[in-house]
Image (cartoon, rainbow, N blue to C red; front, side, top):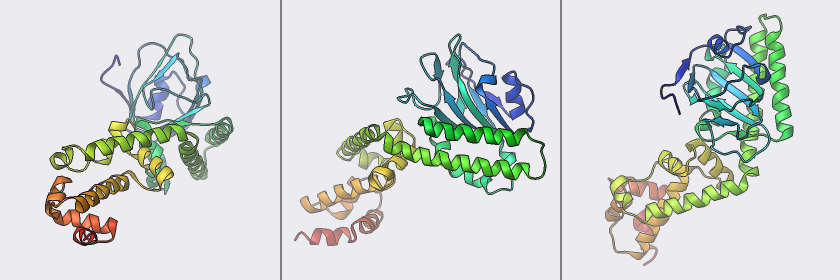
Amino acid sequence: MANTQPQRVRSITEYHQLRGLPGPEHPLISVLNFDELEQREGSPTSLVLDYYSIALKRNFGPGLKYHYGQQSYDFDEGTMFFIAPGQVFSVEAAAGYKLSGWMLLVHPDFLWNTPLAKAIKQYEYFNYAVHEALFLSEKEEATITGMMQSIQQEYRANIDKFTQSLIIAQVEVLLTYADRFYHRQFITRNKANHEILGRLETLLDGYFCSDALPENGLPTVQQVADSLNVSPNYLSGMLKTLTGQSTQQHIHNKLIDKAKEQLSTTGLSVSEIAFALGFEHSQSFSKLFKSKAGVSPVAFRQSFN
C-alpha cells in the first residue's frame, strides 16, 4: 500500500466530512447508502475507525481492491464486512468504478449502558474480519437491506426518548441475522472448509512428527490459524461446525493420539514422553492425558501389558 501510516477517523462526523457528506443527523450513529457517497479512485488510504462499521457491499470485481478480509471472493452476491474500533482497512477503486450497498456506523458511546455494549464484542465476525468476509445469498441480502433501511428510517425520524432503544433493538436483530448467515457460510462453503481441515491435519501431523514440540511446545491456536491464513475465531467456528470441537480441542486430541502411540510402542518413561511432547512438567501432561483419555498415562500403558 502507498500509505504506511493509517489515518485515524475518531468520529462519525469526521467520516462524513471525509466522504464529502453533510453532517450526520445523530453524532453517534449513521446509515449510509453507497450510491450517495463520493466515489474515490487511486492509491488506497488506510483507515482506522473509532467506531463500529457494518457494511453490505455489492459490485465487487477487478475494479475494486478491498484490503480487508479474503484476497479473492468466490461469491457473486453481496458481501458483508464488520469492522470493530481499531481495525485497519482501505479501499482502492479504479476510474469509473461504482460500489453499491449500505453501511451502518455505530459509535460505542451510542451503546453505552445497554446490554449491546458488551454483547457486540461477542459476535465472532468482528474478530475474524482481518481474514474473512461474509457472503450473502440474494435472499439474505434483501433481508439485510431491509433492516438497514428500517434503521435509517428510524434514524431520520424525529429523535425522541424512544429513538435509541428502537435503533439498538433493530441493530441487535441485524447482528443476530448476520450471526445466522455467518454460520450458514460454514455449511454452504463446505468444500473450501474441508480443504482447510485437510491442511490443518497435514500441518499438525507435520508438527507432531518434527522436533518442534520439545523445542517450542504445543502450537497455539493463533499460530495454527496464521499458518492456514484464517483467523482463530473463524477456524474454531469452522471446526465446531465440521467436527464439534474447537481448535484447541483438536490440537489436544492430536497430542493425546501421539502420547498413546508412544506409551504403547516405546519404553520411554512418562516424563520423557511429556518432554518430547513439549511439556516442561510431566504432571501437566499427566493431568491433560487423564482428562482426555479417562485414565492416567501409567494406567494406559499398563493396559497393554
